[in-house]
Length: 207
Image 1 (cartoon, rainbow, N blue to C red):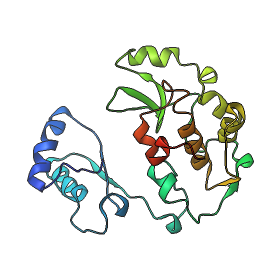
Image 2: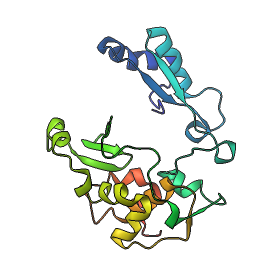
Image 3: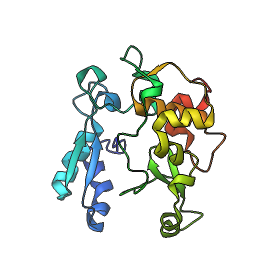
């Protein structure tokens, strides 16, 4: 969604025209300092202009700096780079997922490797190996090695059920969940991935 391919508005028109012809109903573009720095001429803005010209419904996604407002989800690079100095909560208190309905998901994301993600880096399965309809029909959330603990006792349940090393405090439930899932990558490769979703934490074992 960072529109890296929009080196010019003309390039963006070429990339987006086939999507327009397919009837794409929504295009979201990441346009903030975390994606593009302080530049006023960003790929996302070029792509936004191209989408407007083509009549594709388009919106911008802008992530505030943590000090600018609540609701930041500390996932991927954010878990490694934006949590320093943030207020923390005791890990034992983080007993629910505030963002996703893992028991009855209303939407999923499909990554470039065929992974069907219930949440960023949390896999239902792989549609290159199993048809999506079958994955959805066979989904048993309580038996899933990650969703089960999360449904029973939130991110703190991941710590307890999998006996994971942890810090005393985390910036949010998402921060704790993401960090603990990064520690479980090797143990549950079919349920977690791809590794790059977890940023630097995906290659390390620290809590």
